[in-house]
Length: 196
Length: 173
Image: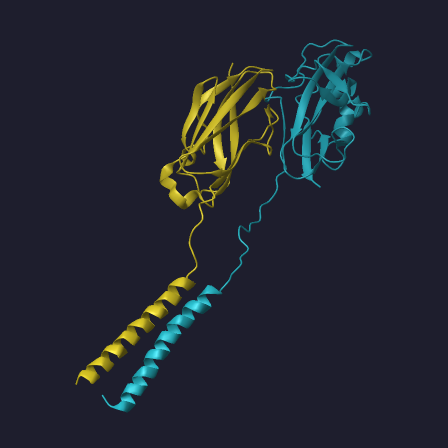
């Protein structure tokens, strides 16, 4: 091997070793940071009650002055703050004009059992609605004109809020003879929640 | 002749020393790998419904383990009250927020010492098992034990799973 080739080979060897060493040195000083676990999830609006598909009242063969009182617990379990409106979209039969309806929000001690009102205490604000069933159906028949209510003195329904509503329905003692044998027909009350 | 051989030996020794030096520098510069696995973060909660009051009510958790390691078991319980006017037959299910532990997190749901459901998380996604029967106005305690299988190894290290216990109820006349 000639002298010139030896010198070139030496330079090559030093270069390779230096490169390897440099790679290790610079690797030691590398650094990263990251932002992980990104996600986007929608909230929920969920409302329920404890009626188990049973009616608040189902009175047959009623006579003037007869009254029925029942309670239903409405619970909000959605994650978004919400408004709740109460209305009926049902068509009410002719007897509806002689049925006095009172809806009062409140609380109930212990574990409520639908439709019992045992332990019910009305909120300080009093009744949400007092009038005939027919009037309720004509004036509170959609979310837009429904009765607005919130738990206690709040202005929003939050997760796990609940309100017990006491319904009292009375066949007016002054109902005329023309009311005999008539009916309100089956009707439903709706609590609709919408996020704020 | 002897002098030439000595020079070659010296060169070879220099070459080996250079390679050894470079290797040492490279190895020393490698980042260390160490540190124990942090464990899986597993939480359980049960949302109440209109028909059933739950204590503690979701999103509050009744199990919150921030470092569950393979081979470990965590447990907790919640109460469910029937607010309806009829006896309810309740089937339970478990809905995880992520699938990381679906095959390796084994659950046992029980009430009064009686097993209602048992199996890996991915087998409990739909209501089933033995029904929990609760009379109107009554309540029952549901106990849950969650065991992370050892087979998962490091797979559970970064898992973050929230499990919702769900109810499906039928009326029992």
